[in-house]
Image (cartoon, rainbow, N blue to C red; front, side):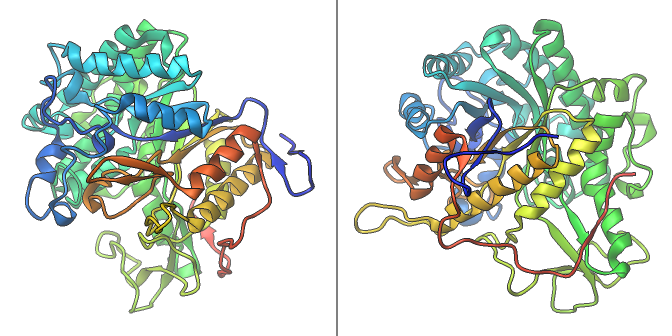
Length: 484
């Protein structure tokens, strides 16, 4: 079991030596330059330009214009004091047709970015797929078509050969749950489908894409560190009557993704209409999906509490699973929340890290996303005093330390995100960044939280809690569903 190391005071808690401090972004959310230097449309270009799909009709056409402000943003990273930068490659910038001919100009952008990072001793952490499937592949069925999985393997091969050993860590796929649930089941994200049969096919094929990407990396970079980033959702039952719902939702949202990668099988408890049909699963698929990984990336934002029979709360999928009508998603009125309406519960992240430690057999775990949206604004003095974000970070880093004290191999933390950006269907109204972006001019302004995070990253320790602190609100004892 790891032990905590204490610094200059009893309140300052140290992280293990070599702990990785980073921040994250993704290509469509920050790059802009949507039709520059040979980039082709992605599903998010199409979705964002479809009326009614994104708040206020916002698009990622310009976003933070990071494609043209590469040096400025690397300077932000340098001043922030982090040792790693998680970014994603725009698939249609590198392979405009999804596969085949490589766009050299697009690939050169990532070469320049990685060179700049390495010059500053910032480790490049590259996400191969972060939701921007080329529209040409979607036109052929998207993730419901096996060809998308094969094409992701081709993209990984191109990136491995071009960028090689300069990349410190390779993340194969980001949050496949959201691609399936929001992209193919409820239609709230690109490509906007609403079809359980397509969702079931997409579930298998995006995990297969992880397998093909991993295979491509292993064959070209045998010493590369590679793994997926996923967002398991804690479902916590507050009464015995909600236990069945928590277990069913755990199978749908968590085990459907964890079990194939970690165990080579789909959970028997997965709802029938989302179970990938047998004819889609070819010989060797599950072996490919469950090939050994080097680390597991956790994206965490919130838990879900379940209880019986409060008619004023939002119901969750009650028609899908027989036997638990009346179970609702419960939100305690005194539970602190972000402006997204998400409950702030650092202890749920600690417990999730402990669960993943057990399920992965002690693999290194990285928190590859964690952060909060807030109603940030520039004061007349030109500051952004985001005290609530500082409290959020402090609470969740405390949860990381608690997990480490419990013996969990947590190797690093990446705050989401470096700067305010295009927040998917929310457009630009939700700000998650450590740096405020004035989208009209592109100007970046360091928020108070950036100063705090810099202090933590450079000192490798968590200082005493700032004021005010958003503590976990008391709740009834919860029973969380766990993989069997």
